[in-house]
Image (cartoon, rainbow, N blue to C red; front, top):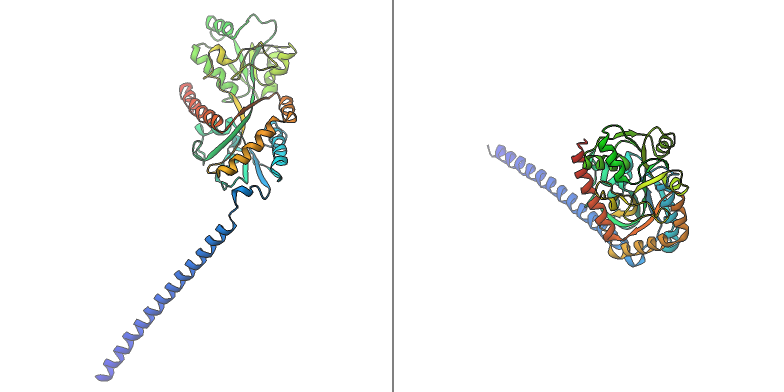
Length: 346
């Protein structure tokens, strides 16, 4: 019996030893994990850049659209000029797709260290999120560094048309429901937003003729297939008097079209918000880094060579700083949402 009891004790002691061994191994794993994390965090802290030394390496500049268009070319030019001021290369990366949403999503997830910035268009931030699910929050995930231009969308008719003002056109449409037609640059594009908003506000019935873009709008009007059209491409035709501008979607009148009133002057500012371009970054930039980027791009904006590029794309130089640009984006986002609901668009 004594031998059996001794064997039971040995078995119990053996089980205790195994349990203790397992616990020891667990403690060892935890200990090594703590050491590893301490090393990683210490290394990150040691390698964290002093904001005063920014930038010490190349900066990535995300463009939301393919190469060759106005957003791409103007983004490249202003980056090139800013790089000369910052003393580091700015590397362009075209991340197109989803109406600009893909580029915006990538930038929202980037580290807020100033080494990933980009240019942004209105459609990707203030229109797209109302129609589709996006992975970013317009008001929380970005730093809106500056606006640098606007596209002057012009509402135009033929020079011999009977309407002298936009109000004349609207009143004619009121007297003749469904008779007048307007070509725009495509369903739910900025031009369509504008015209749909005005016609609903005025409660008039005008036929909308969507196209594949501004060039086709011009063809539709010059060919007299429609009574009016709205697009950026009419800018040069107004200057050469091949068409008559009745209104331009801008905050202020355009210097090279001084006789064309803004939609805001006529009373349709909310219905026709501007189409703008600007520079943005992830939220959370260090104030010193933000100031360096802002100052460099402001100087680049002031360069005559940049204004020349904008003019070649029928764009108007328009500068807004951090506060003013942030206010514009947030208000535009809210107003477009209200308009979409008002129009019954899904």
